[in-house]
Length: 384
Image 1 (cartoon, rainbow, N blue to C red):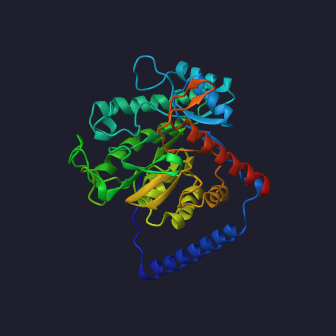
Image 2 (cartoon, rainbow, N blue to C red):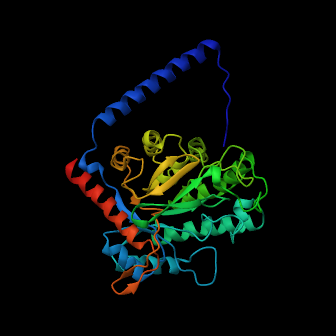
């Protein structure tokens, strides 16, 4: 990348300042007019999606039963490789198609939301060669194989701490709401095996990865969608880690590194809200910032009670966020991808569907979320 430095005289700098202020004012006026005009029905092109596991015929049948037509899924890999073959991806895609599902996104074998102390493939996140180079090549191969099969997007995480949570609280009807209370958090160890990773070092590792993978995404035309870190942690770190993708400014910086239409976010609305001090009011402008720049590749449509450092994940209809307004904001910025449930509340009672035990005690709660999202989309599409 070539960088040039321009030396401006006082007059030129003042002129640029005036021009910049005028442009910013015009942008605010345009946004204000857009918000005053509700999106037309044709702007609601989003699709109900899901990413829950496993990738089996039985599970895909449940998706179809509840009206899900677009999914993110993981391929079954035979021999422990760090990437799926074209044949394995073809098998996954064909299985989805048998149930009327479109495989819109792949979950890779590496760069998942696993705590670094439990991660099987830690090379990229630890910045340790030669494992890092092997993992980067595996991720690049994943993109190339997705392109060969016609899978347009791969989601991933750049996390050392995984998903941090404290004890759940009781929700409606005996359900359990997962959450995070920094004041009650007790790390299992002072440091992870990564040791102290400050913001400078974390950005160095992120940039190293993006420098090598964004060109592959451009070459293959497969989008890469990074999940925000969940949750944000205090300045100075938690377990010695500065979660640089746990702030809005960090996410903005991230998408502008090697800027490309194929480099963006798996926009977890829940995680973004968890990183705001006033999410009920702030989330809509955050959606606009990333959406207007076409950096939202997938949406985890989840609601919370609370804010940064203390929150609980709720059913979508009862949190602090106006989900109808959020959906309208995605439409305003032209987002047309998947809207999917994520981190739905848990429950203890066993569930049986069609006489067979299901694979997760939260399947019923996922079904509620499918219906909620589908209802919002249909209502918006028919009444806008």
